[in-house]
Image 1 (tube, one colour):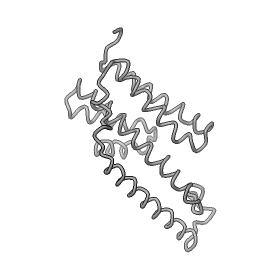
Image 2 (cartoon, helix red, strand yellow):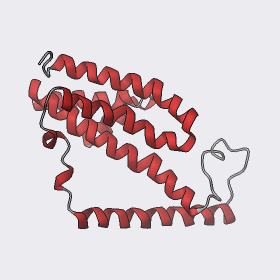
Image 3 (spheres, helix red, strand yellow):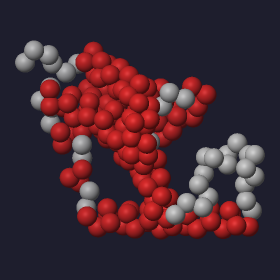
Image 4 (cartoon, helix red, strand yellow):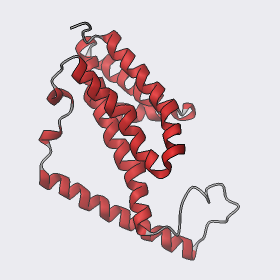
Amino acid sequence: MLFRASLKTLSLLYVLVLLLLWYLSPFLGARLGDWGRVVAPLLCLLLPAFLYVLIFRLNPNTYFRLARIRFLDLLWVLVLTLLVVLGIHYLLKLQAHWWPVPQSSPSYGAFHFKAPLAETLFQVFSLAIVPALVEEVFFRGLFLEELKKYLPKFWALLLSALAFSVAHGQWHFLLSFFLLGLYL
């Protein structure tokens, strides 16, 4: 094998992911519209992670533990998610009817208060579920597990949380994302 997995190659993987997230993701959003929010995390985080595992012939079960999820647990999560989305959808409809947000408000365009249920479901799927799952697989699955090979667990956790916060590219929320990364 020409290369072997190391802290240096893991760092290069992370730089590649940052470049993809910061430059390809907005391009996909502009080209694919709403579907760009679904495709971008898959291309920017999962694809490099799977390539890393394939190139260095690592055991995928170590990083991508999807085999441990039971069908009933997954079904339960999906049902609860659907119930939460339905609740949010109808609460937004009630709010739009009884306490409308003024059109002059900066947050008016951020929420679709009169959106159909299918659009609300898609928004939750594309803005919450897909990115969260993909980030977990990349940052907690591959990145943290690889860091623990080269660094003590404490430093691996700190560096993984820092990488998670920097990847979001929102510098004014860096500390919040860092603490969230530590918690997760």
